[in-house]
Amino acid sequence: MAVGVVAAAMALPAIWFGAAGAGSLAVLAAGAISVVVALVLLGPASVPTVARLVGRPLTAAGVPGALARQSAARAPRRTAATVTALALSLALVVLIAVVGASIKTSMRDSYREVVSADLVVESARGEMLGGLVPAAYRNTAALEEVDVVSRIRYGHWKDPHTGTVSALTAVDPVTLPDVTNVEMVAGTLAQLDREGGDPAPGAVGGILLSERVASKRGLGVGDRLPMTFARLGTRPLVVVGVVTDTASQALGTDFLVSLATYDRLYTERVDASLLVKVSAGASVGAAQRDLESALSTLPPVEVRDQAAAADARTSTVDQIVGMVTALLLFSVLIAMLGITNTLALSILERTREIGLLRAVGMTRRQLRYAIRAEAVLTSVVGLVTGLVLGLGFAAVALTAAGHGMGAVVSVPVGVLATVTGIAAVVGLVAGVLPARRAARMEVLAAIAEV
Image (cartoon, rainbow, N blue to C red; front, side, top):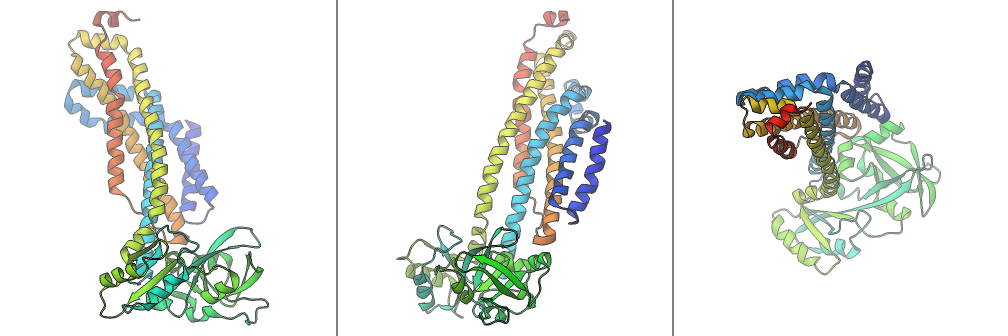
């Protein structure tokens, strides 16, 4: 009990500092672990109160409902162990669902806010490093309905100080303003195409940084950023501007160079995507059909409108969230087996009590109802605890991430409704076998049990 109180007391400041952005990820993780420890240790003391509150509607069903409520509350250790297992499983499902939905919302909103192109041409396989052969750009630019085409490329580089590998985005500073709304914090987009003759010795061009990275690294306009490339080795790029985090997120990375600089750094000459602005007076739908026809002979190419392109950015998140959620649902299944085992043991311990209840007039049907109601009540307590923990952890994690990435909390109501339904089914299914076993007990044999 005392250890649980200490763990809860330690969790509050850790989570507070982590959410405020003042602590590291390790501090935030330590706070989350402290919450779990506090839940495990303080569960026996708090579960009876929660069970009585949550189970209050059961009293409307008469004596069986009241018995189910009392049974769940009078064995705090047994109920707490079962509730904790289910609550942690559901909390993880809710955490992943909320974080995934929030990331998707943030990605879609930032893309739609920044990218104003009418159409986006991308590889149907979604490769980040290339995918569109040069002919795709030429065929797109040749269409009469197309006014502006701006190319996007990506590459990788290594930080010579930390050894970490990051991605960068190559853009055309001349055409990009026609198809995007890139907001600058410092400098101008036109300065991006600086030549290697820059005063910085050995510089091969300029670079734009996101506001988050510029602040984290302490860099401003005129500073140099050493970057290591497979082709040229370590070279400095001059910081010529800082863009908003929303703009950098929409363009894919925190580091932006010009296509001319990209050509000096890499040997690849394929594009990742083309941002297309349709000519004034032309139909976007007709232009999309003509563009699909013009690109039909090239390797798999997808022509999307702005909304479809924004949705495509979240497909990877959907896949990851789907896989993780499927795995976590197995832990919910295990928790259901835990409820079944706990009730089975409880029935063995209450054999004489069950016999006496039957002797004074309780029917088999009422007994089955009481056992199933106890299982559902245990499941609902686990659901309530899991929802609170999951939503709390997600809000804290996204708030901490929002200090640097602009993340917003988006609650997927449909997913939470599904989780609620799963918890109800878990309770009903978990109580079937124990209820049947209790109802089949012989009354006199049960009363004689010592």
